[in-house]
Picture 1 (cartoon, rainbow, N blue to C red):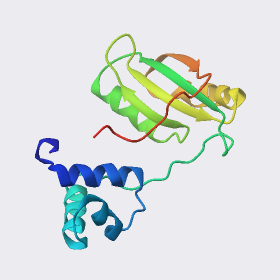
Picture 2: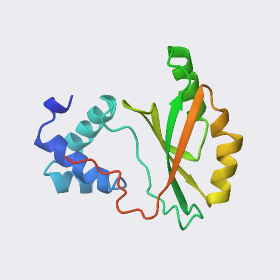
Picture 3: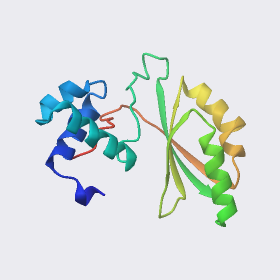
Length: 154
């Protein structure tokens, strides 16, 4: 779909991802379209699955989530059911904010946010180690968040 996006679509996406609360009139003015054509394009982008929703960026530290842990996971086996069961288990864990299936020495990388090291230890012992198919887990505590964004390069 990205190869059929024109300049107006790209401008809409660039403005919208930075300020999803922009009114349709403001959005149209910023990209050079009137309200109705802009609205149609936004609806088309939503229907095509390019715009999947709107979200807020919250300050995790202000919310008491001071620890970010990057977790490498190896599974014991790699059959389809084990992979599906692991992924379903991860989906149920609110502390796991990102999960990527990867190629290489590990099977998955997770980004986990917690209140502190003790709460991560509890999550690890009581939950993560009991996810389906777990073979091994390596945890890496982030020292400093250098960059965090949800903005895609358009």
